[in-house]
Image 1 (tube, rainbow, N blue to C red):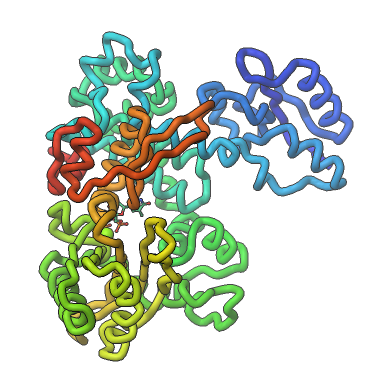
Image 2 (image 1 turned 180 degrees about the horizontal axis):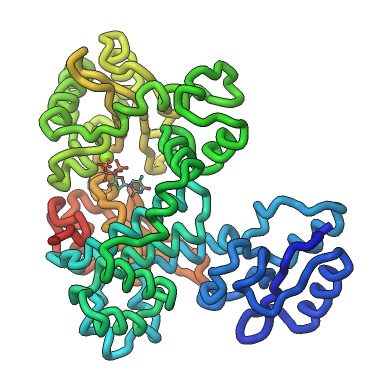
Length: 473
Ligand code: TTP
Ligand code: MG
């Protein structure tokens, strides 16, 4: 069943796989024609306990497939080699990995090495105001790798490069000399291979591995497919495996099972969606929505959030938040707005319609619409999100949808450390036992973003300051 496949069984040394289980596994594998190797670098598949710490798994990243022992036993039971999906440790560990984001580095006492203070900004991103990225030449390479591996569905490598880019952005020294490169060995999260890549970038100005990936037509096709709105890595890989090579091939498909309604829209406006929107056009779009709302429910507040509110010169889409003092009327205004703007031809396509909200049940609620709009023939089609929140929770929604994603992740993480849970709908005290929430209090009232910062004991961060670690070189 495992003919010729090379396996490495990770046990001992904190790997959390008991040696008896490991011996049994090895026996099972051997009897099904697997080849057992002594070194993970030469293995096709690494087997480790689902509880094996990430730090230990990280040391064996060279082995591309890391699965739990259940994959072996269930394959044997099924009488065939099962797909790895559902058994991949990186997937099983996703939640753990999420919570151990770059922002959580400072939590780990092993990161408190004295030396690090001089080269790595240890503050939470949401506290590190004014910090800039001194090494954009390196971090952008890692980000490109992150995006490629995201498109390939390789979450493990995607996460590794995302984490590495995050660390590089937080360095407080410019990496220029061999000594600078050497100092990176002190940082947990940057293994030898990553440091080697930094060295290559510093010496040559680029990274051969990235050039090779970008020159591979199969990979560029997958990356293009994964950029289609509504498609991710798995759809991209499915399309590629079906023999589709270009976006044109996909546009010609009429079978909804192969290209669904949203993806068809994504294909139609592929170029438009990939073109950033100037601020002035974002304002014109918001104005259209404001005017329509005025006719439907006077007194609505409309705030342009996302990258626009952070002051960026161009935006990927238009993120609008809407509120009104009359919660009941607010609840029905979104559908009326969509209908009105569709009739006028401003909204050209709908990607996700709002569901039903329940304002009378006393729970916080919100409504969300995702679609496509176009000002006129002289403008491109643009992605637009319109979200409706009651006034009571509007400040939380503002904070959430202003981003950046990194800033929000950081502030949520800080809230968590202080015993709170923060979302777009509120902030509550929580009691966690073994990381599980066992009790959650009522949401505190915060009518402004300032009030949320105050509650968390944080100095207010203006929206324009929430772009974390902008580049200076
Ligand atoms: P986006 O519109 O995806 O991002 P953006 O406006 O910051 O950047 P762009 O110019 O590319 O559109 O999302 C808007 C905000 O929503 C984002 O800044 C933070 C929040 N958000 C999250 O917190 N998590 C997420 O996964 C996403 C997609 C958004
Ligand atoms: Mg946006």
